[in-house]
Length: 316
Length: 297
Image (cartoon, rainbow over the protein chains, first blue to last red):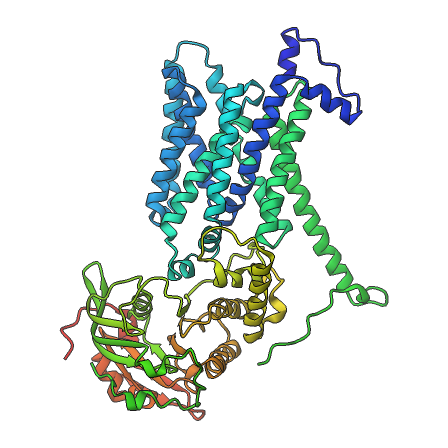
């Protein structure tokens, strides 16, 4: 974006001074950067928390589909002259309610979801081609346009995040139970269908927020990668949730900063950093596994470092 | 169908399970069925079941796949309505989410990628059904203590910190048992807890359930398709097959005459030198488990 701004004759691109405080001050002296950081942080926290449950519930394809169906809403909104993010919100909520109501009957019906998703993308493309004006708005929905966010949109984004966080906290324990152990949760009296529907609606709101940062096409980076990373690092759900939100926020902050000082777009950095972080965690896990294997090898020097075996307390 | 409803016979628990204060032994049967029929979508799976299960009893539910063993558990849990007849649980109609019932569903093993701690999975049994989040340190400490007690009682104290998905089938079975026990149930429903376990683990898990029952005095209803691992620990068996149900002590139900009557086919029960029983002559039944049949006599 700054690259784009520079090409339009904005002359503030001087590169980082590597004095972090001064650089941050410089960056945040621009209103559009303050807006981008505020909206980016708010949507990243929500994306990180919801994303952990997306990974736990193995519903990343549903998340993917919801965002793509949202694109038709964005294109339709552009055609109608309404804010495209509003269009994403309305249509992704409708899609999430549809999937949530069908619930278990839809489980594994990848073909149905995929067809509806493809149809929505086609519909979105039709809307764009019908629109005679400048289709930059629709393009922004595909790839994200966080630097262009208005102060009013920032306020709505932050408010949405607060609402999503409150609702997520309210359904936290039943949602965790239903995600990890649906049958027992149902037997314990949890309305797993209703909890699933509620989660899908929160997911739609998270998607709508994250679309502003990473766009419809790149939403996986913010919505799924932090949760997948956190699930590999921490075994306690609460710790993993906190890490997932933190990873999403750090990726967003780093991407905004990098995009400010380079001519490349934010969502490119979001996807690259998310991918790199995921690879890093997997490699670290593999490294730790290899280390344990090597330590466990019998030998004069090695065997000592092996993991202490738990005392055999099995009483059978 | 033939059922043993006389309480004198059902109250005789051979292992002498200690009666705990919370035990409702005096309050009457834990489960009581009268002319009960099971089915869904207008199709009856089995019918004519009359039985009652006393507090502290160990009942094993047997039968071929698709005979409707799991649907009995779902009816007791209040997740499925009886097609006909009445079913009473703890003296009232079955209701969803009854905290007095612990349930271990039939399942495939967990996703090996599931990195969530075993203790957190067990902890769902403590407060997973409540709204909101638990935030106070005291609540969390109490929960952790209850979880480690439950894990210790199933001999899995050392597994609490491990990733649940990486545990073996037998270890995961113990976790699920601990998750059910942590809520201190008076009735434990186990759906095929021995499936997909090797012979040794089958013996271990069934003995573990028997020991826990002796310790806590709860009632056990265990569904299995193989009687042998539980022959030494079960009080009575319920055989579900051929659209009917037969309840009684194993030596009365698992006989050639009784099962032939139930299956309406020539079935023979063989006993080997170690007392293990084998039901033979069911090839036609397993090949056509849903073959249409006339009304039960």
